[in-house]
Image (cartoon, rainbow, N blue to C red):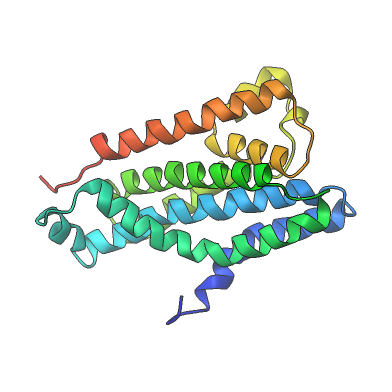
Length: 227
């Protein structure tokens, strides 16, 4: 971030562009959906881009081989690099958190707790996906394309920037099998958007489950060594 500060606009660009479009076209009425979606997308993007960076470290710099030969565990390696990825998301998240009070009735400790929990669970989920993919992707170019595609699948198509209620009931299950849907639902609920209690309860159950499942997948199914 210090050596190449021009990377920060890349982190800001997509979520803030969608937020701006929602604010203009919705005449301010959809701004809260935009904020919830921007928070979710910012965190999930950085978690997924962990996969591209780890692929680069593994293939171009052979760094994973060094880590494998050391006492460092896959869990320590994954979360150490994932924390550096999360650092890139911090400036965007600070801005988003700062504007929340201007569009809500107020920010309470429950609001902060719910948003923080959703952010951390989303970070664990997407970082685990990124780490898992990084151990199987064969070249760096493919890694960046794959991550960008998955980011769109997780952040644009599901109800991240719009309410899940507008999806027909017979198709809603498709949205509910996407972890970022539940991240956005919890953040929407935290910042004052009315969500059905059953949907909020489902998201509180589903998001930790997704985080646990993908974390276990990364730890036990990732290709840690080349042999």
